[in-house]
Image (cartoon, rainbow, N blue to C red; front, side):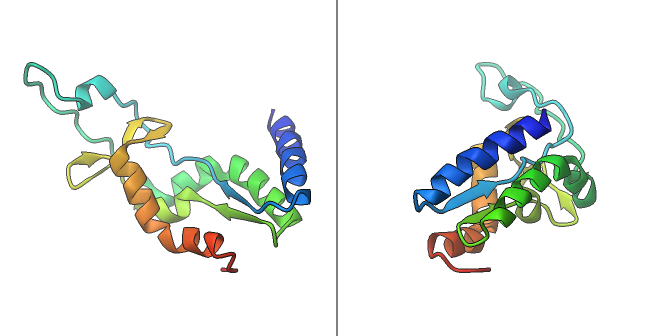
Length: 139
């Protein structure tokens, strides 16, 4: 399956690059490592106990979990380094550990979706990399 993804992505990016486009690939999402019960995160008509935060995942464990996808993306980027950039969320979202909550706010709505707070956290931490891409600067 990963080989199919690699081939399809390579063909798609090649078409875009040959048309003169620049492409920003965003790596695999950091998995918080636990199920998240979204309805329990939302306000309700009756008070309910908040979910206990998931334990933080170490940066090294998160990095290992995204390696397969991120290696495919890096290979595509390396084929067109002047036209394709790669932003790996694990490099920006995580310090020594990858948080699941921050300042009492959940950064995820599910194992594969960031919440608004999580999106804001990710964008604020990767802001310089995003600006370099938009300015067409190397970095």
